[in-house]
Length: 306
Length: 58
Image 1 (cartoon, helix red, strand yellow):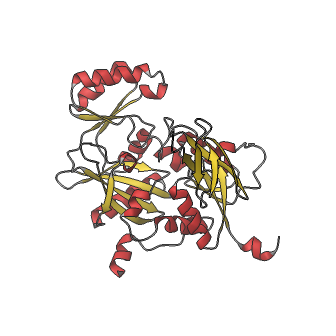
Image 2: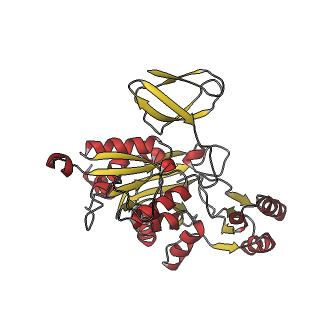
Image 3: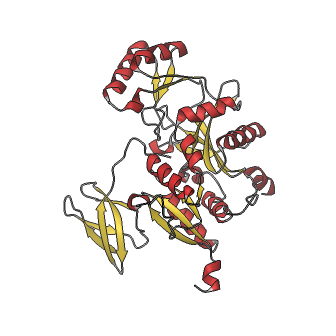
């Protein structure tokens, strides 16, 4: 290998389904002079004893399947690969209970939550929260099975349905207070210590969920000092990386962090953001093997310059 | 632009030149989803795409 080639940095992108985000990150990495190695998570056979020599020193985890991404990240990390995000961060973000526990322990404002561990005690958990409340699975995304529970009959039906699914994780009942919020929430994307995008996500007409995957649309959201502080505190609490921090606004203006995403989708956020989110991620990945990642301007600084 | 044949309904699926391995295409006739398995000098191979599972998301 000649010196020119060896100096060119290679960044891996671990995927199982190529979306717009993966193509965009790949394009931006190449624009920044890096080589990109696409790693199909579905085809990996990893030995715990023999390090994968073919895997680059830095790999961006971009799997759609949470368990696949997490477990491959764990193995590669053990072999010395710098995973973005780390397996630990992925693990926390993929589990709503683990996320809530950390946020609560570090006084990051988040919705009041109770959890029950069987159908038998689930109704008690729901009634202790009071109606209406929200029931969510602890693993899952895109708003799947996130349900507003407005009365006892609905609660009983939902618990019965969960029970019948036969999957043990469905017997973990994670119940949150219903926040009286506008028909939107806020998605902030953090890359390291910087907020690179801040958008409102509006629920589609006649629905309650704001997920872009369900048809919600985005608009730019001003990054207030309070929002910045809340989001960065949440990111630091989870462990930093490339994160999607979701925030709700209470009627009295208080901000509550309700979710942190570890394999963030940002096509919706990009539609309402001037700067390239993918490029910020590319830049972060390229400098990720160094001690102390290069500081990048935050949205606030970018806006101030404009 | 290359073409692939839907394994379900045999419709011809047009594949854009900028497609990459790992990307998902859908049959315009029956809606079946396929993953681009390989691309070599204008020949493309496809395989049935994985379907959404409980742990999918962000």
